[in-house]
Each structure stands twice: as C-alpha cells, then as structure tokens.
Image (cartoon, rainbow, N blue to C red; front, side, top):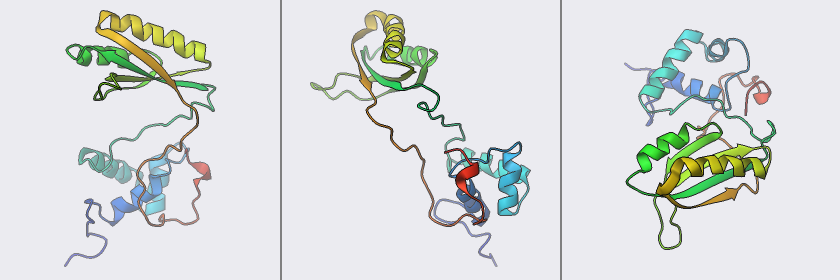
Length: 183
C-alpha cells in the first residue's frame, strides 16, 4: 500500500519534492549551508535536498537554480533590450558570439513578424546610463558586421516582478519567512 507521502502529483512530485519546491520557490536561504537549512525545514538532510533538486532538474520539473540579480539595486538603471535584424543563415553562430559578450545577460532568437517586426535576434544589455548601453550595443553591432541589417534598443520603462512558477500551498515550516531569502 502506498501512503500519501509516497504518492506523486500530476507533475511527478511526491510530498517531499513538493515541500522542497514550496520551501525554495521564494529563493534559497542566504546562509552558509542553504541545502541544510531547507532540509531542516522539510525534515530531511541537506544532501538529500540537493540530490532531489538535481533529480527534479534532470526530469525537467525545474529548469535551473540560479541567482536573479536586481539590476536596479546594483546601479544598472539603463536596461535595454537590443533587437537585431540578422541574416538567418548566420544567426546560430552570431547568437552564440553575442551571448558570450560581457554585458549581455540574455540572448535568444525570436521569429520575425513581417512587415512590421523584422528583428530575429534579441540581446539584453544593462548599464549605469543609456550611453553605456549604447556603447555596448555598438560592440554588438561591430560583432554582427554585414550580417546585421538593422537594430533598435528598447529601454525598460518600469520594473516587472521577477518570479517563477509558484505552487499553491503552505511551506513546511510556517514560522520561516521570506526575509532571509533572496527575491
């Protein structure tokens, strides 16, 4: 007989995996041993938390565990999504090159929507001023060379809340707060 703790939900999460997701979805604790802290909250070892997180990532339940910096708090107040009309035959190679440039935090290919939107390569730049972003965009422009027909810089006009998917439910330890977590 399978008890409730062993049953998996529609996402393939058992009760322990679900508790780990609920305990970490607002961020990992900013302590020397975050896995151990989460483990204490859900009643398992830190090593098991890490093992289960890695398994959930390998199974596609979670995509990644990464820091999400608040660029504004770091002083990067000019954030520009650069959009580029790049030769489709060269976009794979050029996209990899652009993604490797310092200052590019996101780089991806998107479909064109002709005739109004000819841009197929997107790269996010962060700077302390618009001039800094424009200098970075010029570096990208030189790298793209003749393969680039046009580009624009779309500056952020407001800060959007950055969060991932959230599971409904209460955290295992209701006394824990988000004050000690990154957001």
